[in-house]
Amino acid sequence: MSEPDEPSPGIVPKSHGRLSIRASLTPRDLMEEPRILRGAWVAKIITLFPDAFPGILGLSLTGKALDLGLWRLEPIDLRAFGDGKHRNVDDTPAGGGAGMVLRPDVVDTALRQAAEGTSAERKRWPVIYLSPRGRRFDQETARRLAECDGITLLCGRFEGVDQRVLDAHEVEEISLGDFVLTGGEIAATALIDATVRLIPRVLGNQVSTEEESFSEGLLEFPQYTRPTDWQGRVIPEVLQSGHHANIATWRKTMAERLTKERRPDLWRAYCAKHGRDPDEDREL
Image (cartoon, rainbow, N blue to C red; front, side, top):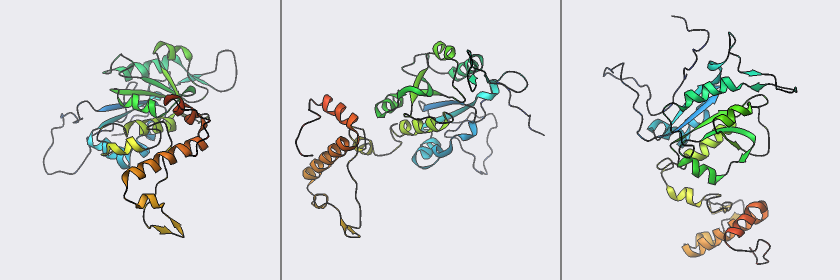
């Protein structure tokens, strides 16, 4: 039987989670619902390119956590909600100008479907538009999102999204940084990766997330491993001493030094939080 030329409006093409297909000698009830871990964190992604997901998110630790049902991914094809025979999703900007803008009626329909079965409280279920004009994404935001029930991400294209639909749905705007991408899919992938790894049991070692970059507002200290002497470069002696207190002091000092040199903005924020002078003369 041939496949339809176009997806029907409202159909989510793929859902990635705990269920996977494997050969088995035991017959399976065709009406059985996919088994999803109760309370699993969910990422719904409204995009014109649903096949871009899970992408890298399906590999390594995030992919393993996806298979285990620790979180779930639901790409939603924005084109399925388009208008007319050609499923148009955009139109020319009001007031003139180059490019095209995603239509409010199309985006509204997609957001309404994505909202089914989710909390109306934005603190529990944020709706986020990946936009270069949004608030810059950081580790604190990742922690906040990881504590939610799930998130809905809207991946923009062209010149952006009609402001009215963003206002109507109380959409939060988040930027990956001060640069422009051709669409929000790469930004969405990075945001999800940074968030999912903070979900309990995903990394399997909570200490890792506590010691890495930005956890205390500092960049991470330098890391070393064997061989001890590599091309005449030797691991710092303190790391070979076995003296845990001295090692902790060295790591903290190096983290502060790197942050002060490379990210003055983070250093100022860190000093303000800890009541220190960012211009202090003490040697780091």
